[in-house]
Length: 411
Image (cartoon, rainbow, N blue to C red):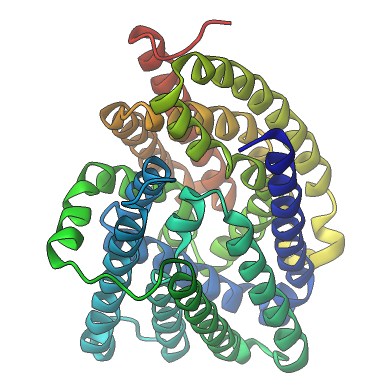
């Protein structure tokens, strides 16, 4: 892929993803006060559990699929591998829906609205597993996924403004999300058929994909402990209101970090391809991406810190504590951007799965211990501090591990 096409892909991806994140942030000043702290806490809890449940069922096939597609790009095996990855994830999502149908009646949540919210959020996450994200990433066609997400978010914002009017409408909001997720998934299937032809059903190939992802499975489980479960920790260790307060800060944090995500989405497949085809070009790319990651992270930190002071004015005094939580989250971006390049860029491209796993294990352990110690006493602020410590642990392990094994350029 040449520089012109690269720049065009990046521009389109930025436009689509920025639009999606902008719509998500635009909805926040309406949705949070409308639902109120308690019900917004239910939403944060349901979304937190749903993301982790989908990660449990993923079995590492997402990251494995991205790498497999990137490595088979331009070969005759691409169609076969693409359908193996897609059908593997679709089947795993179907297993999740089946389990949800069996266990739905015995979910141990006394509050009916909380129970329904969790079930709806879980259903959407399992259905979303049939969206061909790993294939799009591996082919460097993330713009299609970004535009699908933009359409989803735009429709959700419109439906929320029109029909979500009171705290009890939380269930309606999640029903809208489920409906739109299902529509995106159907579009993804249509794209797969249009791009690769009819499905290639190979049970042995699907089983092989599941086995190939086993080394990355624990990595994903541990990573999502501190990227997804903080609201759930706060819900149980503190209160729904503290979970809601942190969720507000986290949504702003992730929305702004989407600026980096839009850029970085093009990096892992490029590095995976370069590591296989041209080691000299790979080394030069690593040096360049490390530098950009640090500058990008510092810029995002400054932006988040400035935005933290606007939250009481936008959301009301019920969420005033989110200012402090977001101010501490503003210290995290340089750690995330740098660790992304070292981990999902360098280590992942070189097949250093054990180093990735070790780094994430250290981060998840530090995060969990910090949550248990800090969240009961400091609430949402404790969640921010726990994430900061977890990300710091990941960066240190990756940096030391790659330097010792010669996988990190010293320039």
